[in-house]
Structure formats: C-alpha cells, structure tokens
Image (cartoon, rainbow, N blue to C red; front, side, top):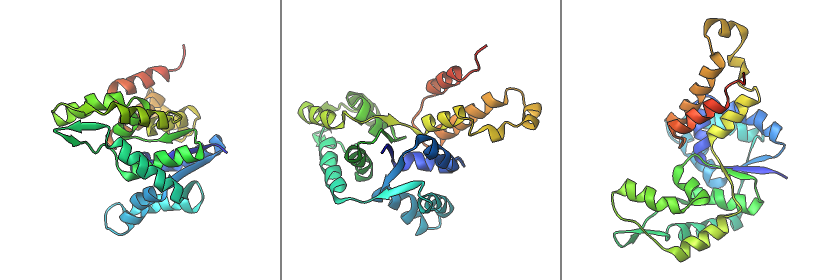
Length: 236
C-alpha cells in the first residue's frame, strides 16, 4: 500500500497555520497511509502535553492520530537502521578536525521508516535533511556558509550514504499545500461573497498560505514561492 512518512516539521508547519485539517482529505485522495515514527510522536504530542506551551497544537495532532489519519509506527528494525544512518550521516562532513552533527535521530527514523516501508516519499521541511536525500554535496557549501569555516567531506561515507538514500523522494509542506489548493480544498476561503470584497482572492489565498508555511519553518525561498504563484496562475 502507498505511504508517506512525515517528519516533525511539516506537521508543525500545518498546525501553526491552521491547516492540519488538510491531511484528512489529502489522505483520502492519496489512497494510502500517512505515517510518523514514535520519536516524531514524542516531539509532536508527548513533550508538548507535558508543558504549558503548544499543548493545544499537540491535542490537534493527537486527534488526527486517534482518528487514524496519522498512523504511528514503532518497529525496532527501524530504530536500528536509523542509528546506522545517523552515524553515517554525521561522519560525512568535518570542520576544525571534528565531525559535524548535521541530523538528529528523529529525522533519521523518518528516513529509515520510509526505506523500510518502501514509501513514495518523506515529508520534510528542514533544509539539511532534504539536501541529505536529494543533493548531499550541497551540505558542504551550506554548512560552510552557516558555520563560516571550511568544511571537508568524507567521500567514502558520503557515497555509501547516497547509495542507501537513493530510493527516497522528498516533498515539503508547501507541496502538500499547493496540491490542496489545486484540488479545491481551500475554496471555502474564496466564496462569492469574499470574491466581491477582494479582487484576485484566489491568488492572494495561495500567496498567503505559501508565505505562512515559509514563516513557520518550511525551507522555501521567495523565488520558489514566486515560481509556484506563476505556475498556478489561471491560463488565459
């Protein structure tokens, strides 16, 4: 059966933009499963529920888990694979004679679960994890710029990592939001009455949700948003 595996970031992005409700109709259209790992559940639900902050957001995610929209998977084989990938990924790049920790266990559990399930894609908003899967060579440049120092590469480890991650595809929350827009799931915000009050309402709606995702944590550039806006313009 088809599946997507979600990292913490995209679910936070959707929740903080009042768009978590989109997952249920998207899951039905997808005709597959939306998975998270036990570690992601801890970050999204268990930890926030033990504090005062983000407790309501955690309850929203919990509701989607209880209804089966999001399924939590806890398999020892996935954790073992995640630790293997974690050690490999965090020994690919060095600065000042030390390995650079570029990813955490939660992110690698998401990757490991997707490999284990043969999922269609992982849903990740964080830039480093996306680079790691799609174009790991860019991490050297990205981390060098971020740390303001020279970063070296362990090419043997990087080659081994690329080989293991090769089957994966990555999508972000903005791709899910754009798909929801294309499917008409956001049309409840563009009724005839609202259209009378604001010209170009659909365009404004799309721009608002894309920028909302960017400002709440999705790694997308303003140029990418402009490209999506251009592609989604009605054909004349």
